[in-house]
Image (tube, rainbow over all chains, first blue to last red):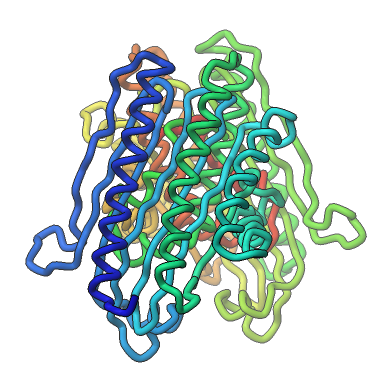
Length: 285
Length: 285
């Protein structure tokens, strides 16, 4: 597909529709496992709050529930000009600072320390070049127990299937990229048990790249629903909870010290609330 | 005083002695107000853990008490060569990368949301130049209540007295420096209610500069003991505690996103545990 306006429209509609699916699924899980009527609360924001300029914006959805201590789903579609300094770092922006970007970002911090935290983000970026990027990763409280490893296995198995149906061999590459990305050098440890991460994806077969990006989002939520089923009724104790709060402190450290998206957002006057939605409801050091 | 070896010895001994005073005072407050027998736990670290090279190191002291949810007191004396990139940023290191530094760093997160969190750090740095740096600041849960403002007034009044006895007018300068430093641009808010901050202090009267730096540490602990007396018995509720955890989230954001010392430490392979000792025992987003 070659019509750029059409691509923008299609991706934006997709991210919005995925947001609906994810929010609905998580709300249903709240009802099913905790008999809770907690819902996502939605908030719009604009890159130019005065709305004199149309620079795009987004919608934050946050659920503070009984099953999910905090779940955040952001969608945004933004456009404008990159700063000069930033142009050097972004493909296709060296000669022309105009950009357009649409995406979805999801972070789920469950109440139960035996239900892993998960993150998923997919996006379509347009400068003088255009590409998809994204990924999904899993962060259980315990990285070494059989239960955590089994859950991570399911997560990886399903992502691998999605990768395989897109392009043989890409799972291995995207898994490695994820391991390298979600790493805390100052702690000499990984953030969690990995997943996939990809960027600058443009194989010249736009429809296929788009289907893959859609499937990453769908696989993520379907797999997480499976993981919820397997863990929602597990008993945990105060010691497990303390370990979860400890694991979350590393999550905070990663996001504030290392995450490119967080740094990028904050340094370019993004919406702070949306950017830092990923931070856990409670963490301890 | 002109003998550099003597200066190094004196400052190192001072920071160690101040550490003893601060730890002892806080342990006594634990006994007095909470009838608690909790003590600081001490841990040594070396910049070269293999100890093949002598690059200095430090001692972390942490109290997890009933009055103080977490209090950390670090001292360190380190030396070696700055990395090339770092040499450009540090006065007196452009032609010679050798440095020596000794200092103390204190962060106190009380259990009670009505007792302010406080931070103090003083240091003596030697490159081809030499200088003192440091400061102290106060972070109450509520920034706008009369009680918080009154406590901040005491904190500032005592620091002003210490500044005045050193050099007329320097309080104003150091207060402004503190306000500018402890500021979160992405939240458009201050970390707390300020204090003083100074750096590159070298008036050619070393003894006076040293006395000032000693007095900053002494004023800090004496003033905090006064604040403890005024707040330890105040009743608080769950709502106050929630607000405190919220305030602490901003503390984390500041330290991980903006604090020069934290960034410097992590980027130069400092001791992660010592550097991140400042992070609160519990924080919420």
